[in-house]
Length: 314
Image (cartoon, rainbow, N blue to C red; front, side, top):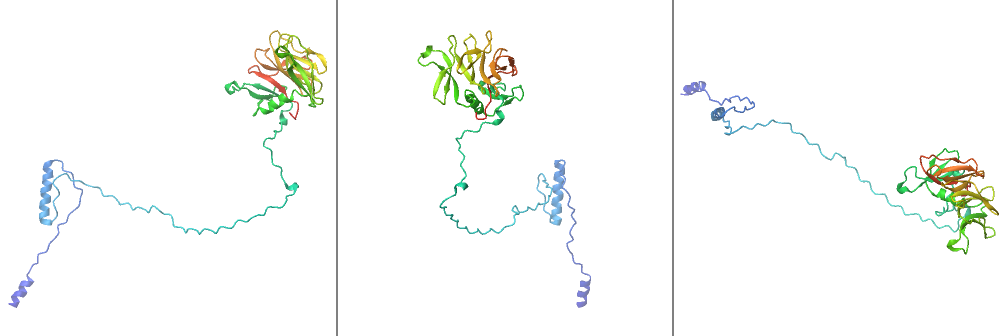
């Protein structure tokens, strides 16, 4: 019996499960319903023998595997140690000095002080113009050399205004020329040229016109002669008179044109004035006796109310 068991054991065959190799491929999409049904039947049969579950009855969805990106930490800043606040030092109290030496006191600039007149403008002729198309037809203030070159626009109007105010005074500023109506004459009195003596506080009349009026006086820097404008001849012309030695003498003469706003040169030998004799307002220059009258500015633009700068104390 034992021998029979031994022989039986030697000839015994043990059945084991041999797996069927499966090759994974992309599942093709069936081209028609019959093919789809066939694939489902094959899968079902394979499941019965190998244990693989059948695919669902419907379209097969495939997904392409992708690499999973590893997200880096968003905050890569290394932590830093928060410095401890330094202790606040107590303010040092500076005692108020008992006195300060006068030599150590710096004067405080006066914001209301009159600015110094620019020396670079002395000798130049300042005037008004709209040559650059100033807004609202408000004129700009310009400078030009007596020879006609160096045309420039002033960045401010106050130097022009200061030069205009200074032009009515004599070089010593003892006398001031004015255009005034005779006291007591009312509106019917004619405006004449008067000079005021600032030393003796007295005013004296120096023109005695009967047909016209006089205005815009300017004092010569080298003599007691006053140039001005008068309508005594029927037109607005340039005249000149000595302060205590009338009568006045006419320097310009036109048929209908006018000449305005005279101003002496620094050496008293010439006079600049405005005239429309060329059809529009321009600057002209003549000798102090009225000879050699000639234009100064370009007729392409208008220019008027010239001032020949003579003094640094304007």
